[in-house]
Image 1: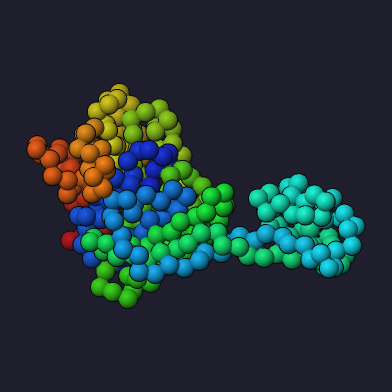
Image 2: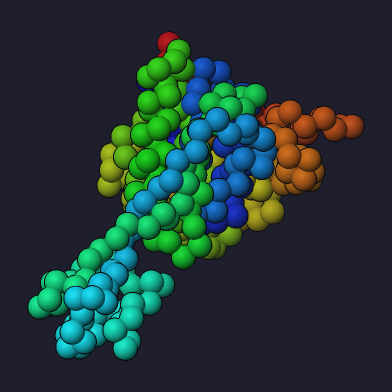
Length: 290
């Protein structure tokens, strides 16, 4: 089984566009949408949900009024200012448990709450493991792990030998959870100073976890000077630049229609779609060398 994570150092680089196109081009694969804070791969893959489960990833303190003597120690020890007048604000509470430890009457307990939901769905491109995290929840790294574990379980119970991961942007905990144990990290960047800066940051994370990095420059023709800087960076680090995708309105039109760009029918041939197909062929060769 091979695993590839499509990630980006910043949002808005076209990562999900590439992931959706790969989902349409690849065979014998399981798809995992690990961008649980802002999942939108389903908008293109049109999944039919087969299974839904609650995800409990965080805890909140609760006061037992029958035991509470209103001594005030819990309010004094709470560093998040979540306790006032012997009531706990569930939004401010971080579930650290210090209030429970400090309570002499053992009147405070931690309770798990529903932080979101995980889903297993069918799509025309293959099974999809995905999730939705509730607003303001902070357990996204744990939820990414659940989504990935579900995708691995799906792959083991089928003939699929590839897991295609649409990862989250940035360099935080959800990205680390997406990268753990994968064979290749395809980093989608854009030719801007912020894109170059964040590419350097995400490369540091990928290298730390000893994952093979590949780079794709999306909309390379909007700033060819910065594109040259990205190419020079890849050459210096010995990282293969597997794709350069031009700016193409057909990508936006395909997104509006809710289909991967490689399946979008246009009056003229989409050059960007052809470039994405060429990039997938190269990635496939790297994943499964002859």
